[in-house]
Image (cartoon, rainbow, N blue to C red; front, side, top):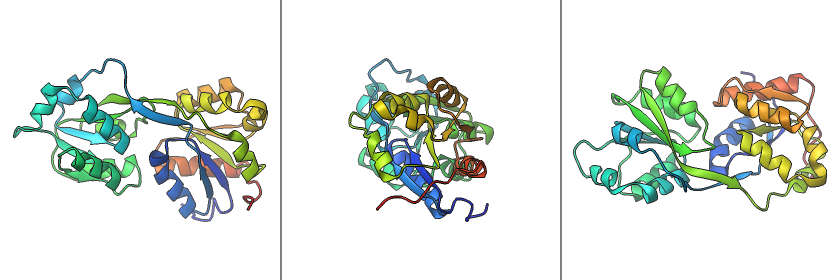
Length: 262
């Protein structure tokens, strides 16, 4: 990929901060200007959790330090006691912060990704010790990259949600317009982020709808269409390359925008 293709472009990322960091760093390394403004925040899941996939998996995979903390606060005693046995599961973490949260909970980390996203963690796991099955412990806003990547790589992987997303109450859309009048695009990672942005846009709703949107997943694209976002691009995947290619697609359509204001 050509590192100059995104030079001078500008993007708003709406994922929770620690999850958008790999995307932001990758886009910035390719010349883009990035503004991270999370629309959602995570809290422990309040409903009933199906723990069976966790109990049967030989590796527990985490992509968020916040979700690690929620997981151990909710873990039933029957599963917690299994961590003291010889058959306890292996742990995998997307990066250093997530790995440290696992260690704080008293567990060791077998596979640690470089902190550059779920796709790189999948590669680390697939090149590591033999794993019979895995479970991705995540939130309701988590993307399917890990589950799909491990399954495609020969490791059956389930998904369990222990965190749920709520809207960040003080999201200030007017700040986006104060930073710059025209953005290259907004990356929406879930239907909930689309709904959260438009619900808090107030008189700037039409301005937001005119900014090209990149959808991570078909359901997100459908939410963008329902919200009236005029230009919609769907990322082929939620990994770094998929987001990059979607951004290039937007640029190819002729949308760059002026530089950020001081």
